[in-house]
Image (cartoon, rainbow, N blue to C red; front, side, top):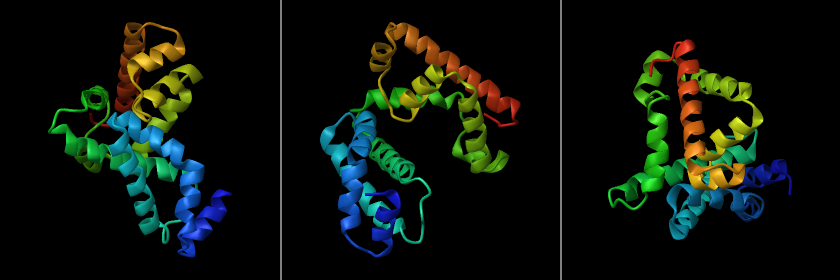
Length: 185
């Protein structure tokens, strides 16, 4: 089923929209949630929460890219779940991944005072667009999809240490690019 048809089902308030969403994008959303949470049951609950959130947001929202819309919801819900579970110290891999970005992306409070979130997003998009494809894939797979450094190293046929160094250099370049655009870190 096409994305427009699925969105149409949401606008008609037809519960088949959820089934069609899960059929088309369920595996993608489960993958995102599982990478963040490292727990299949929690990931499944987050995907279910994704469908509920989508049901509540469509309408009035009409997403331009449904996969990105669901991915963003899944990621947000999964990070919220991770933060809740973090007090139990069960998800150290995700904590490490998020802490790696703290040095190069401003906090939410700084974003509000220095520039609009949209401008920050556009600056990051420009930076990502300037990367060579392998660097962009590695960065997105690590910091959007939440893949482990070891898995990325296996994919790119390098050692985990080499991959960690490459990601560190990418974070430094992101920080420099954002600072050059006037973003306060």
